[in-house]
Length: 344
Image (tube, rainbow, N blue to C red; front, side, top):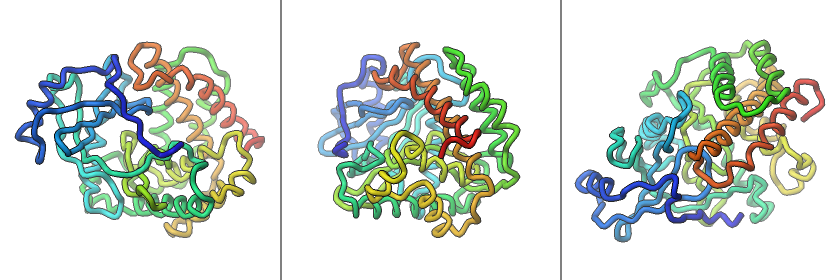
């Protein structure tokens, strides 16, 4: 990928009358002067994201998608809460400006944040980057994650952002329920995982802020330098277990690309990512690294099943929703292979 963010006209399923939004922003959003222009960022399958332009100023709006939504999904209010709490912290995030729960403005709850100049690198193998820059960027990527997990929850006002303890018990229960609500076919590996995961939760119960979707594609990279300037897409964030995030950073490596080929690109492999995180965070190594990898594969399978079901219902944030169904089967199969000791 080139790193350019693609902005298009608002998709038909997500269109709304911009006039009420323009009126609502006037006098509320500093620096905003009508007229308002609204376009939509392409990509992503969850909360639709829009570029707002007025004169030479830009902002970004995240809103809930239209239609009937799964319980506890698309919590843009939580995104606003955590982003506001992290303003001025060691975690780079966009400045948030406004939050609105009144559906009469754009049809659903939304929030406004500053537009950040930078690159979105959708290819986690960073094929368009020089090998030396790949390694430097992933080092910064892991450093930012360690800083995220070091956030003092009480000082940030996030001690009530989620229930402390029993993170995996609650997460596994949540994603089993979400998957069952959006299930469109019987996948044997998913059934096996729904039995295996609750019975194999590690005793380790560390508690930190977790992002829930921490990947290179959910970070804004500096326009010219290999460093993170903003962490985006906090919809799945909560108080939880740090190794859920760490395992998720290696999700793209649990695919068809051999570890040797990944290393040849200058990108740290799964074990190297884990080792670097342990080194910069000072946390003890996980007792059962396999469990954490199995969980993230199961969760992404459940998430993608929800994306596919929303697409069938006409509410997807992208026309590419049909492409995720094979990934549900693929992630489930890889997770079960790890359980049986046949995967890496």
